[in-house]
Length: 294
Image (cartoon, rainbow, N blue to C red; front, side, top):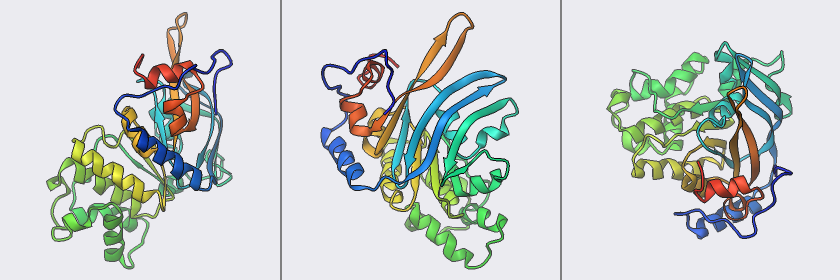
């Protein structure tokens, strides 16, 4: 767990409105019963844009087959951080990443590592569904075709759609445009598109923020199913969602340098989700999860 030496633990447990304590108890049981195998080992990670740090000094471990949530106010570097795991920040010319992210013990930013291979193994689903202007089938088949995986393509597409809990809804209209799907279905299609190339990890940056409550519930239920086979990392502004789906939660905040007019994201605290929401070790975390700021 990360906490500031300047802050003392709150005297009384924090409470977050709208979260059933039974859900937190369930998260605690799941986390306790799941073996903690380190998949990502992040050490002193700093990300800068045009030499201005957006996120600094982040160190934490992410465990295999866990759902890990990043929460915090806008501008604290959550999206910047999650994009580091599949080297999406490489696509921004002004971005610079210092520190290390070990994945299965391999430095993701090592000179011998192919960023394209990284993105195959570590897929990403964005805030707004972004299906290709193709059929439902061709969206899912796109990645395998690019990789030259032509054998058993129909079975691969079906398997990915089943894993994304979408097969039964689309199996009779696979040639229809992906744009004919609802927003929630489009997001699950994007998840299926990631799964079709057999990744190890799913990164999800606010995957349900543009969806209605029913679609949001479907995405959350899907995360519970998928973590049996995949490791999931999610950015969310919805604390109730983090409490419902995450085994581990990292709270980020912002340090303000008024002299230089800079705002830099920092990791305040990282722990099991029930601890973050009911007994955090840092006053800043308690203030955020109880709605006092953010």
